[in-house]
Length: 510
Image 1 (tube, rainbow, N blue to C red):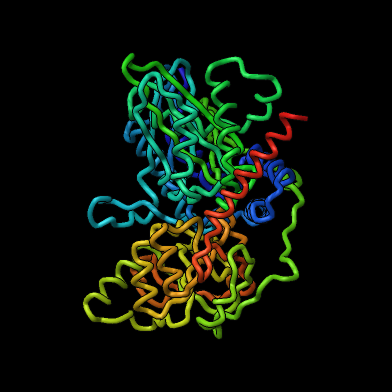
Image 2 (tube, one colour; image 1 turned 60 degrees about the vertical axis):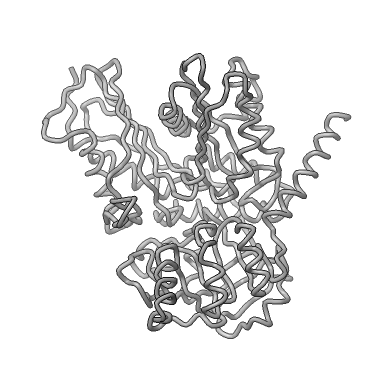
C-alpha cells in the first residue's frame, strides 16, 4: 500500500501551475509551427508568428503566456490502494492550497481571476481558488494528476446540445463553430464529449483536451475506430470553414480534434464542445509515494526560429496627437504600430463608467477619453523592472453593450481588443466614425514588451480590472473594423472559405 504525503501533492500542484504558465506543451508548439509554414493567409501567418515568438519569450523569461492565467481544472485519479500520510485535508483542499501558492508566487505572480458569489457581488477571491477538481477512484497504488489552466475567453465559447440519436455530430460542430466567433483564440483544439448525460459529456470534453496533439499521426496511419473517423471528419470540415488564426481567415483553425465518449441512454445523444485556445496549458504527473512530481522543462532549442517584422507600409500612429479625422484614412486589414498613451478598461470599469454617466457624475477624476483609445485588458502584476506583466487583449464582445455609450458620450475614438465585434457594435463604430483594432490573443508577454510605463488612474479597487494608463512604443495591432464599418472578421473567413473550396477542387481533379 503506497503512502502519499499531502505535501507532495500540494507541492506538485504548485510546481505544475507555475510550469504551465510559461511552457507551452511542445506538441502544440510543433503543430502551430507546421500550420505557420503551411499558411497562405498573411494575416493568419502574422498572428501565428506572434504566438510562436511569444511562446519562446515566455519560456525564456518564465512569465505567463497569457494575461488570463486561467481557472484551474484538475483531474485526480486516486488508486484504491493509496493511503494518505494525514487525513486533515480533502483532495479539493490540497489542490486549492497548491493553486493558492502557485498564483501568489512572488517570482511569477499569476493573475487571480476567480470570483465568488458569481450571481451577485462577484468578489475576487484574490488567490484563484477554488479550483475545479474531478476525482476518480481507480485500481492501483498511485495517483495520476492532469491539470490545466483554462482562460475565460475560450471557456466562454463552450457549447452543449442534446442531439437526436440519428443526428450527425460533425454537422452540428460545423454549424455551431462559426457562431463562437474568434474569442477562443484559434488556432487551438476542440474537445468533444459524447454520451453519458449532459454534465458527463462536458467533463469528457474537458478531459479530452488533456491529450497530446496527434492528428497528423492519425491521418498517416488511418482511422480504426468510430471516434478516430469522427476526429478526421471534423478536423477537415472545421478547417475548410476558413476561419483561420484569430478569426482573420486562413487555412488552419484547429490543430487537432479530441473526442471522448461513454455509453448513453437509447433516447439521448448529449454532445459538449469545449475549445482550447492559443494559450493551451496542461501538465500530467504521477505520485507513487517517493516524493513530489518532477516536471522536465523543454529545451529552448526545440522552439522554432521564427521572426516577425512589420512591412514597409505599416502605419505608425502617435496616440498623443491622433485625431478623429486621422483615423478616417485607416483601412481594414492594415497593420498599425501604436506609440503614446492609452487607457485600459474591461467589463467592470465600463459598467462603473455607465453608472456614473447615468447619475450625472461624469467620468472619474483623471480619466479623459477625448480622442483617446481604450485597451480591453486585465494585466498580470509586474515583477522586477517590468512596467507591467503580460498584457494581452481580452474578448472585445463583452464590451459591446457599452460601446455605443462610450463612443457617444466620452469622446472615445478607438478601441483595442481581441476577436470580432457584434453587428450592432460594428454599426455603432461606423456611425461614430471610430475604429476597432485587434491585438493577437495568445501573445501577452510579447505585447507587454511594448508597454514602457503603467499607472492606475481610476477604480484601483478593481485590481486587474482597474483603469490603467499605458505608455506604449510600437505596439502592433490590426485594423479589424474601420470607420466605414468594414469588418476583417467577416471578410477574411468568407474569402478564405472560397479559396479553400477552390484548393480542394484542384486537389480532387489533380
